[in-house]
Image (cartoon, rainbow, N blue to C red; front, top):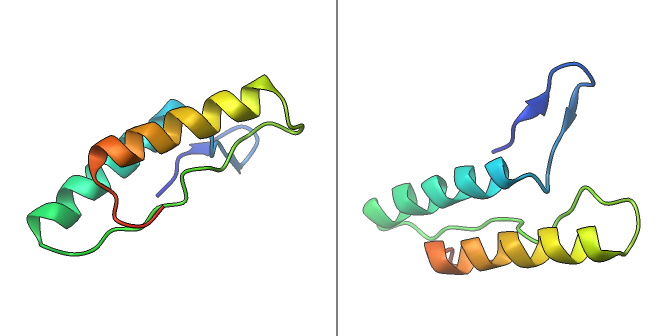
Length: 71
């Protein structure tokens, strides 16, 4: 699940909206008793810098708190 930047035609992997979509995905999986998997450590940063660390850490934390089975 992802959202697209309509003008550029790219996806925003590290955006907060992606974490919200994955959180909803985890809730649906839990209600259906299905295992869930998500790629949460991806980032939009082009360098290994503070942006990359913050996006990876925030999305991983939301995934863990949401109950994703495999990260």
